[in-house]
Length: 248
Image (cartoon, rainbow, N blue to C red; front, side, top):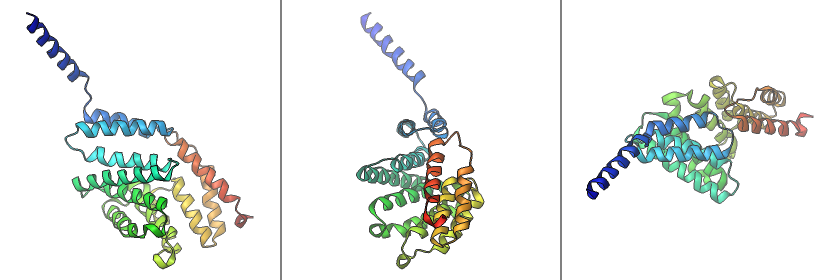
């Protein structure tokens, strides 16, 4: 009798756990909603936790893999210690590569591998990271081939930044930077970061009046309720840049 009661209890608990266990798609949907209304890094870490849980239960792991890489990029970019940044960006590259391996004809894995490699390189220093340039370019060119509009012209935004950051002897070119950023703006005219990058490139080319137009555009942008901290950060950057003596 007692054994029967214990068995019944176990069955009830198992059934109840099944009822309340979230599926991978439910976890991803919950994380996506938080990501689309991101206000701070604490929320970003919650998003990362949910994607990791989804990865643990998903049969098709492509989506959680690349979305983990995406939110790790954001977290790493807002982490102070370089050692911690390197760890986060390296993990993101790993997750993005897993996504590429699973779905080589979709852009997500290539894009987030490339941008995280780029950030990893920034943390290490440009001259110490020249070996990453070719893989980043290769990933971004693949995204252009698959979907040039991805992330509001993201692949051209990344390439524009790569050509800006690289020294001339290593293939850097302010002209190519401007060309790629202009193409990026065709797909994402209201992307504040692209306009900041374009302004920096134009300043380097001594096209000061054009640079001012992009910075003033950023300052006039309405806050995006989904990305308040990021838009505000770009506005602070624009105000700081406009204080440069080049604009006097």
